[in-house]
Length: 297
Image (tube, rainbow, N blue to C red):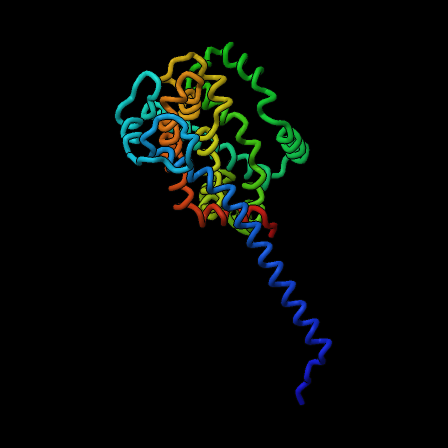
């Protein structure tokens, strides 16, 4: 025996479907607006980098003529202002060293906090969380004078030390991942005679590919996109020592912007390519690392 919906029930179902449809339309409109807000500046940067006009074009969104000469100039025709290949190499060196050192610090601290039990462990965790509540720029003056006393200003070693020095405090996501590793695996390794270091390198790390990829990408991005710390430490005024962030920012000075803005846009596009390619290749590991570190098992 089939039940036929009453007229009132049909009206309620119809009203429910209308509400769902309207809600879906509103959500998609909001997402469309947000996408436009994010994508329009990127599109403008891209088309400006292809413009034949060297300055800022206030007359129209799209340039009158397109050319690849800006990319050719910034890559192969360096001058006293634009030395992009050297800046790119400087930044790549700092980013690679920081990536290796910071990843090692983060992974080791996370393993110690997650898998080892020692006195004052809880206190150290609380202190690290408290320290992370304060912006790093608050310590800029103190850091600068310490580096100056050690004669490490205007050096990549000092810059790498600043980036990598506090990286271990960002261990929480990695610790969350290690918390999901079954304790029985570590206990079995110890019963077989493995030391703590052997357990870490031969049992935990092979299972930690997602969080390692996430940590590597995060560590690489810090010096690649940073301007404040790099500007403070590399302050000699010698343009060949700059990173890409400092060099590109210098092109926006009042005396240079009318002749170098299109080159600045081309450099900005080129800077985004390596990190974009890295994200595309590592995307599934990156997402897996975040979600696995967020779950407690």
